[in-house]
Image 1 (cartoon, helix red, strand yellow):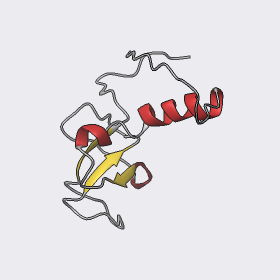
Image 2 (cartoon, helix red, strand yellow; image 1 turned 45 degrees about the vertical axis):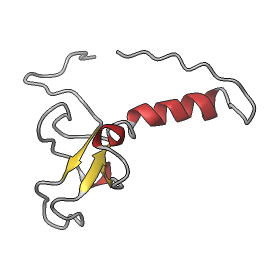
Image 3 (cartoon, rainbow, N blue to C red; image 1 turned 180 degrees about the vertical axis):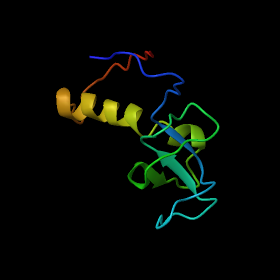
Length: 100
């Protein structure tokens, strides 16, 4: 199995921003605030190319920073808390932050 991506490579699956351009048939307007849960080109860049299925509207009350955490980070936390350990009302949970 190939472990390293082909170069050049831009990492990242999650992000948030404003739509600059769309392809034919895409139903999101230019200038719309969005977050993305996947990218064809990587999201650690000024621009990212995404499929429509991975781009979602971002409410005004949510910052771009928060929006970029909706995809993998929040779904990972949800899976850990509710699907793996099945946390319930009244349970105490220690959140240990880590990155990498």
